Structure formats: C-alpha cells, structure tokens
Length: 185
View 1 (cartoon, rainbow, N blue to C red):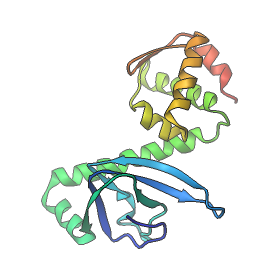
View 2: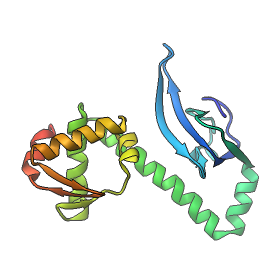
View 3: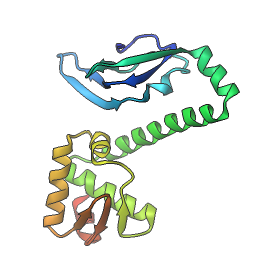
View 4: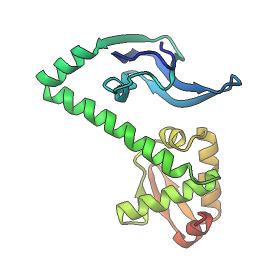
C-alpha cells in the first residue's frame, strides 16, 4: 500500500480488509508496529507534518480496498463538518496516547515487568484495585510489543501467583505490593 519514506499527501482510509504497519531492519527483519482492520485511517498523524513522510511501511494482510483523500479534501471536510474534525483529532490523539504508553513501558526489560507496571498505573489512574482495561488483549499486546499469547501467558502467571484475578475485561489486583516487587525502580 505504501512504503517507509513515501511522501504522504493523501490520507489512506482502509475501507475493507486488513493491513499491517511495519518497519524493517537493515538486515531484513520485519517488526510489526500495528495491525489494522477496516474501517480505519492509516497514519493520520503524518498527513500534516512538516516532513510528511511515512515512518513505516503499510502492507495488506488480506484483500483490501483503500480510499485516498487528498490533504486539501481532509482540510475541507474538517472545515465543513465538525464531527469529522472531532473524529480525526480523536483518532490522532488516541494513537499518540498509545505511542506514549509504548514508550513509557519500553523502559522495562521483561513483559512481566511491563504488565505489572501497566496494571499498577491503571489502578492508580482509576483509583481502584478493580481495573477496567481500556484495551482489548490484542491492542494491549501491540502496545507492549508482544504477541497476544505471550501477554495471556503473563496474565495467567500473575493469576497463578495470586497477584491478580482476571475476568472478561475487569481485573482485580489482589496483591499490589507483590506487583510492585516485579517492577524495578
């Protein structure tokens, strides 16, 4: 669909199918940055940048249909439709928040440390030991840079250690001190 370094002057909208944003190392190894399912916009934050080139390649993972909206059309839609502007800005903000969380968690070496820190932080923000996870397991795995099965394995290990209890989106922190011991200072 698009390559890293391409000039990005048209907003790509995935109308059907699936895609993946990825980066490649100089040795040819590919790293998945995000998975995308239609309908969604692709790389909206880079459309209006001073150096608006794509930092990732966008690859189809299943038959896909794309809409390419010129930057001027996006500006016109924002001017004429407040709901479009709100949705566009919300999408950019949500992706920036997910990236900030990825960066915050990247300082931790192991997945277990990242999960413990994430859960403690969510508990602090929500002010309760019963945490409503704001992301699906798949989205959380992407934020943490791991596969969904690896994330599920850590949740199971924490539950077996009686640090947490997990049930369909709600998670109870049973032993916050035990979780804190998993996170290095």
